[in-house]
Each structure stands twice: as structure tokens, then as C-alpha cells.
Image 1 (tube, rainbow, N blue to C red):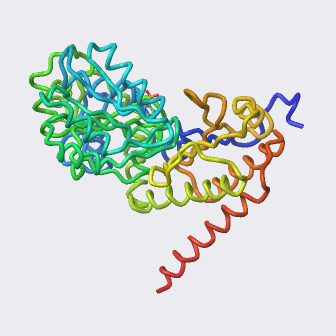
Image 2 (cartoon, protein in one colour; image 1 turned 45 degrees about the vertical axis):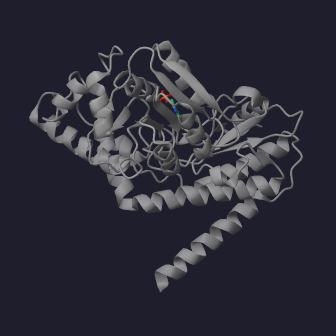
Image 3 (tube, protein in one colour; image 1 turned 90 degrees about the horizontal axis):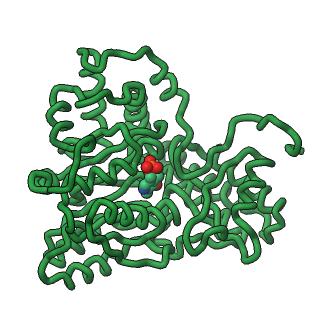
Amino acid sequence: MAKNSSRAIGRHMLHIPGPTPVPDRILRAMDTPIIDHRGPEFAKLAKKCLEGIKTIFKTSNPVIIYTATGTGAWEAALSNTLSPGDRVVMVETGQFGTLWKNMAEKLGLKAEFIPTDWRHGADPAAVEAKLKEDRNKEIKAICVLHNETSTGCLSPIAEIRKAIDKAGHPALLFVDTISSLASADYRHDEWGVDVTVGGSQKGLMLPPGMSFNALSDKALKANKTSKLPKSFFGWEEMLNMNKVGFFPYTPATQMLHGMVAAIDMLHEEGLDNVFARHNRLAEATRRAVNHWGLETVCKDPKYYSPTLTAVLLPEGHDADAFRAMALEQFNISFGSSFGKLSGRYFRIGHLGDINDGAMIAALGVTEMALQLANVPIKKGGVQAAMDYLVAQHGSAAKQAAE
Ligand SMILES: *Cc1c(COP(=O)(O)O)cnc(C)c1O
């Protein structure tokens, strides 16, 4: 049917875990004439963004806005606080944890892993044990992904903070929230994180190309003595210029217009409602997967990701061929697989501006594609997801009526 057709019909169903669909309201906010990035109108816009983004990270300290992808903000976190040869520890939750470690090595740091099987989040007890072993307190930073996007595992950041404190260790805590910010509960100040790395193109519903560092006082202090080279990513120049509403160089002005709209939309919905929606859609997705008789990559419910679900196909089924077929037949994109399980699973993104109807459509298409690929499943996963959503809306409606 879709075969031999040169046009994909309807809106593309973008169900990868980022970039996520950009809402029309944000696209329209960005569709505005370019303004002078050293003029008074710009300063007002920048100050709105710099203040607004703090409410998303839940911090009273400055948040740095980079014209760079999330990877740039990773580099900024390391290069602004550390010195050549410093020891850093990464929790190897999956592909992104691995990439961050590779970057640390390229920057001249001594990076080591706390390993996992890529099917669990970061274990606070393992962090505590690692730090207790370090009697000379040589480890300068612990790096954790709040949400490991390659596997769909969420890590308990507040508990990891407690583990560091229990070990009595002075290491800085760096957290990547690129695929969880504005979609899973996150509290930079309350959880005692030193640098939080964020990106524009996932929960924030913006296009790719902008990223963030949220800072602690301790991180700002480390910045004063850190010796890794930093120029474009240097905090000091940024912070000085930001005070008066400017940047050291030309920022992505259209992205900032979009960011004002994105922050407004998140607060209009209410951050707690945003988190509840992501949890609800994630649970609906898992109910469908479970009904189909398939397994999620994330093995332990306590680490289930609210923003994506990675689904294993049975032995003998090629997940990459499955994704290609689903794209061709149904105009839907799923996320790819990594590492030891490469080719074995696909990822369903459920983050950003997604409502129940869009989720059910995506699960319906997934169920059809699984059938078409002759994956042995029990039909009716979508019904299981719908039953769950109906029950959730039912209790919400009842509460509203009381
Ligand atoms: C997407 C993502 C990145 C990479 O971000 P880019 O914007 O592609 O540089 C890093 N970490 C996590 C957890 C991600 O989800």
C-alpha cells in the first residue's frame, strides 16, 4: 500500500525520545523578525529566559544557556570545573553514559566506570561504595544520567546525593537531564546537584541546538581553580554578560523566543501535571508492551523511565528492520538500539507535547507494525493501555467533581 508511494501521508509520527515534536504555539513564537542581540528589546527577552529557565531546573542560582547541543553542555560541565588528570566516575547506565566518559577521556581526565548491565539505573549503594574506596579523596566528580535515553532507565538523583554525603566524600555531582528535564520531577537545588546538564529538544519541546548548565555555589567555586581549557564554554564571561541581559556572542535569538513560549506552556499546565502526564503515558505504554508479551529493556520497575520505553523483540527478530518497515508503512519513527542489545530492541518515545490520543495512536501503529512483522504478540495491548488511561481519567474526573 505505502509501497511505491513517494509521499508520506499525514503528519509524521515522531516517537523517538528526542528531538520531540515542537508545538505550533512555539513554532509561531519563533516566527518573528530578528532583533538586535545588543538592543534593549533583546535584553528583556534574555532576562525572561534566564529567569524562567531557573523555575524548570528548580534553582535560585544562574543557569547558563548555550547555543550548542546537549553534548556541548556536557563539555561545559567538565571543562569549567576540572583540571587535567582529575579522576571522574561515570555510572555506565548505557550509551549516553559511555559517550560522556569518552568525552572526559578526550578532555584529558581520568575517567572510570561504575558498571551496570545497561538494564538498570544508577545504584546509590554502588556510588557510596566507590567513594568509600577512595580514601585519598582523589575523585573529583560523579557523573550520572538522570534518564538514560538508550535504555529507558531513570536514576534516583536525591538518593545518589545522600550516598555521596554518607560516604563523606567531597566529589562534585554532575547530572545529565537532557531527556528528563520538564518531563520527570527534577530539583537541582533541593537534590544538591552541582552541575545539571539540560537540552532544548526533548521535554522542553524546542528544536535542537540549545543546552544548559545549572550551577551550584560549589561548582562556581570549582570554576575558579579549574585548569582544563575553556573558551566558548567558559562560565565566567557568560555570567558577567547575562547579568545585563546579553551574551558574549550572538545567541540563537529565535530559540529564545520559543523558549519563552515553552516555559509559559509548562507553567500553564503545571509542572506537577506535566510529570503526572509523562508517568501516565509511560505506564500506558508499559501495559501495552506487557500485554503483547514483550519485555522492556529496563528490568526493575523502580528505574522505569517516564519519557521512553525500550522494547525487546524476541530472538530472531531484527529491530532495525522492524523500525524501517514501520516508517515505510505507517510514517512513524521509533528510536534505535545500542550496545550489547544492538538490533534487539526499539524505543518508543513518550515525552514532550504528547497527549493520550497521540499516545494511543502511536501504540496502535506499533501493534499493527508488530503484527505485520510477524512478531508473536497477544493482540489487545492498545486496549490494555486505553483501559488504564480511562481509569486514570476517571479518578481525575471524580476528584474534580468533589
Ligand atoms: C539526547 C541526549 C544527549 C545528547 O544530546 P545532543 O543534543 O544530541 O548533543 C545526551 N544525553 C542524553 C541523556 C540524551 O538524551
